[in-house]
Length: 344
Image (tube, rainbow, N blue to C red; front, side, top):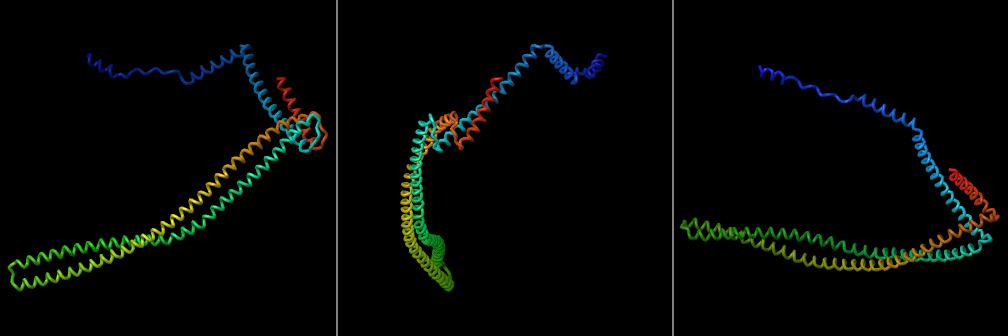
């Protein structure tokens, strides 16, 4: 009975797991929390004021930054206009009160610049002349080098043919030597057999026939051996002649290679000498360019100061009216931007 009850209870399914919070209930509670936060925010006047103040200050800072950026650009534009005004007045040779010293300095700088430009032009002409010489050297050696290479070409081709012949002759000699060794071996075997036959007890007639046969074979092998020996000698003589010819061709090719190498060396030495000289003059040209840049940078503040003086005096000249108009518009924009920043 106890066993039956135990088996009955053990076969019952386990109790179902408890379910968690429903999905819709989570969002419902979240919405309630948000509504409570908004309600608190609406009731707390001090909190609203602090937030409004924070956003307002941030907005003011952004507006101020944007206005300051515009103001900086307008001031830079005015400086460029003043420089252009001063330069134009200087080019027109206008007599300006309180600006004589600036004009003297500008004229002095202009003379220095003209001198530097002249030096730069002379250096550029010298460098160009050396570069042309460099090209002439390239062309000067190009034809002799090409001629030597063309002269060497048939000798190289002939040398290649001779070396191919060497390979063929070596194969022929090796083959003939193997044939000679084979004949020599066969000759020795027949001679040995002939000696053995003379010791055998045979009928006189059979012994005579066999001896004649062996003698004929030996004679034939001897002739073949002599023929092969003559072939080997002929091949060897031909090879020796071609070796001598190969040496002569190699000497000619070596001589031409030496000539080509000497021409290349001469060309290289001349080119290196000119390239070194060009490099030195390039350095001098770079120094002159640096001085010209320094000269131009020294003139910029002088043009600006001269432009300020002319703008103050408003020198009457038709070429300057456009500059006055542009400067006035820029001044109005600067004043307007400064007032906006001040009113913030």
